[in-house]
Image (cartoon, rainbow, N blue to C red):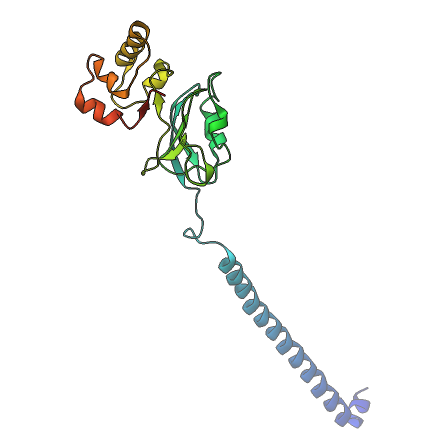
Length: 209
């Protein structure tokens, strides 16, 4: 064997060099693969993070406050959400009373912040608002409100008027029973406790027709 190695020394050395070169090449390729993998993983993680929404981009639905009055079972101020409609808020208020006139209300209208939703009684006069919306649904920023009919409104409806509490509402009903219908809105000043200042606040919100 020793003689064979000496005789073929040249070929043995060539084979050794080739084997060493192959091992070196294999090691270098392994290092290169690991390096490429380390570069790819952080990049993927970075790209994934970039697709995540920042806290500033995540917006919560805007809270809306709506005042519900008139012929609903539970009048009051209700919290609503952007995109909700009048019918949603009315249902939250217990729905209409038996005396509520749904023909004067646009239930499909979107609610707005500070909106007043007034449900008139059957036979009560209403004022149409913009775009065919009943005057019983309005904003407090200048839209007209459905007028309260002094000759038809009940005690709860009368209390929707500014400055009219339970005692004054009862006095109005008593006056109506004793003296008959109000012939003009000025007759309201015949009620004890309703002077000129109070009447000035009420005259554009009431009617006798």
